[in-house]
Amino acid sequence: MKKLLLSLLAALSFGVGQVQAAGDGIAWDRFPKERVNDLAALQNGARLFANYCLNCHAAAFMRYNRLRDIGLTEEQIKDNLIFTSAKVGDLMTVAISPREAKEWFGAVPPDLTVIARSRSAAGRGSGSDYLYTFLRTYYRDETRETGWNNAAFPAVGMPHVLWELQGPQRAVFAEVKDGHGGSAQVFRGVEPIAPGKLSETAYNDAVADLVAYLTWMSEPMRSQRVRIGVWVLLFLAAFFVIAWRLNAVYWKDVK
Image (cartoon, rainbow, N blue to C red; front, side):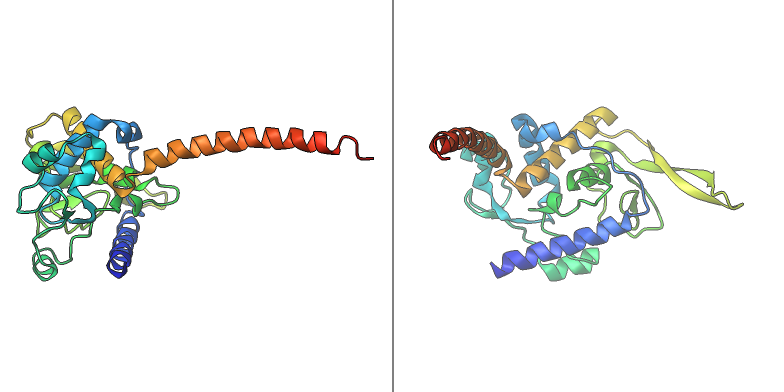
């Protein structure tokens, strides 16, 4: 329990830092949230997560066998999503040590179990919106040690792990007058330097699937909770009508 609380606090504090970093940045795009209920999208997102994220980022409060909830068999999980000696019932941990991670990246990559729930910001959008924007606004920046920067999180320390899929991008800025005789450079988007393995539409779809998986992983019981909640509300509504009529019958002869 102590480890869980410490991890959640670390993720939340890291999320606050990212939101503050993006506070004066670009608007967040809307994540297509219907994908969270699409099993094919979740399965593809799980594949992308295992191939591109799980090397450095753990999901230490999620077990591999929980992926049966999105329609995968234990055999499919073992053959396609586990690339270490881990067993299907093990937690999604990583081999990299915190000390090595800090030496290589300057900070320990945060656990991603609840990452989609720790990025929301009032007036800007949900954590899913942030992640969907973040993974689509990387651009080349030779002034950075990694060679990459990000419009949603300026001076990001994480390199663009999906760059082969998207292809390298350059940032497009426009000079805008500030109304006081000065001007400022405003981010307008990214444009391709060279094509990637996926088209722009296919890459956006892939990112949407990955974010859908991260969103699902942050609360696997959400769909069931919502479904049960609807039935509870219907029961309470029916019980209210019955109780109201019983009350009327009970008191009708009382003067």
